Image 1: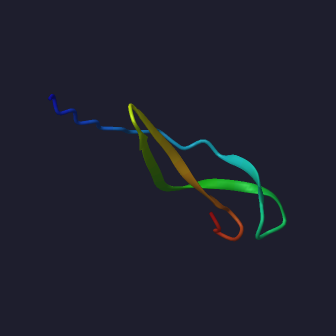
Image 2: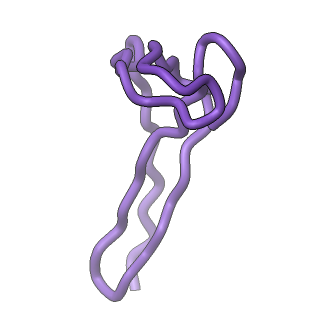
Length: 58
């Protein structure tokens, strides 16, 4: 079995405008700098964790 090492870098995370349940309105969500990884059989899913810019809820 071959061992692979990945070095992932990004320039900036894309901003998103989403509905915030805590604020009760659409606000800008910024990337928290964290990400989540989920592995299912042969697939690897990676997604960013966003925080509300007003109340910091995820």
